[in-house]
Image (cartoon, rainbow, N blue to C red; front, side):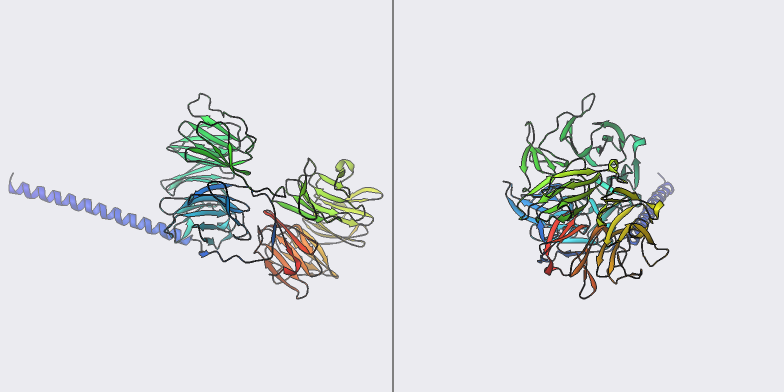
Length: 640
């Protein structure tokens, strides 16, 4: 080789090295620029939050009325079982003995617990039990104390699912903001393609994630982009109820069956027609928990992969399936169950204590003249609680199902119950005596409120008003002058009847409309009227979106500093006592008006939920019904 060719070779090598280095530098700069841009985008969308220890438990004066626990999730942590549900977190020894009960509204924030897992987050050196709540963010429990990760944005606190990743990150599914990522320092959307969606389930990690939605199918996020799958791509239904991953297979549960995906592509439908609520894939079979058919198994290698197994009467709705110590465990609303290897049938492991009440979703409250407390439910009929609280009698049938109002009838001595399926009249002994529907002259089957008027009753319905008196039944609606057919709330005073509707307020005198109030002809702040009570010489009016207003005798509406605002008063969730006016709201707690100081305040501590749905006073106690249980408080202990 000549010296010239040797030099040329070295020059070419050097040039190649320089070129490679230049490319590497360019790639490095591009990568840094991309990462910087990505950080800037995420920073622009970051959500403010605080991490704080839960304050010590204070005695708020509220006493819980024993309602079903209804477990939703389970996890093993520090050798103990932890079961979570709407009522709280329950810690059990392996033997099944209950060690601690951390109740929502008492030990924990007033919000149902809906998700549970374990992990080591980036801002903690220890493994923690991680708990997602319906409206109060994330709770982390180290076995001794709780801390709370609380976003300032209410939509970021409305959590549906959580996944802890090996990197120390927490993926958070929400009802409105899609998937959020908590990395110990920030909370921000994981990716723009996953934003602004109602998340129902999550599986995977921050790099490869499957996200189920309420009505937009399933999304697969990978390599910085998302693939969407709906019914057009083979999904049995656009509503996703469960997700599970095993190797390169993903299983998507829906109300109409389970879809199998292989390497990110739709493969086939398993268990067609099954309402899948929980999934657990194993080596040769898939366990499918359902809403009403227990747990079924599907053999992967079968020619026709249909469910095998019969409904197990022990199991209610199955919410979770997971393996532990060689067995399969199922979380149903009524407890934790175990299927041992090679065993047949499910065996109960842990079950909640018995409860006096049948349900937690309260819709109406009242007392009869014997002192029994009547408790109506959104979709479980009603309970009649004995005066000493020792037991309850449950009533549930095709008419007594969705209860809107319970009205003790002083004239008959019985109780009239307004339901979505008619007016059900009980006698003084609590026995069903009569059922009135459209066939009996009512303007509609759906009854929303009841008031004494004239020598009979006025019934509110979505189609207008029906009057029941000695002459029979007669009805009126918008054609007769009502401001709107859909009547939510009634208040009566002598010959006057106050009808709160979807479109404003109608004031009747001797059965005829004399004036209508709307936002266009008065200082009414919102036309949708949900509740009304008489206070001295005024009406207190609850609205769907403008809080509480007062209407004086001259027909003028007045706002309050705290009591009026951008919040919802729940239908007929208002109560007036000699000392207070109380209003239950949709997610904002209990509003309290002190008649002596003429000031409103807000009560949030001590409630099992900030969605207050019913109020009643009896025997010196104020009973507060929510969508997550019933509590009571001695009236003198009421304070902001």
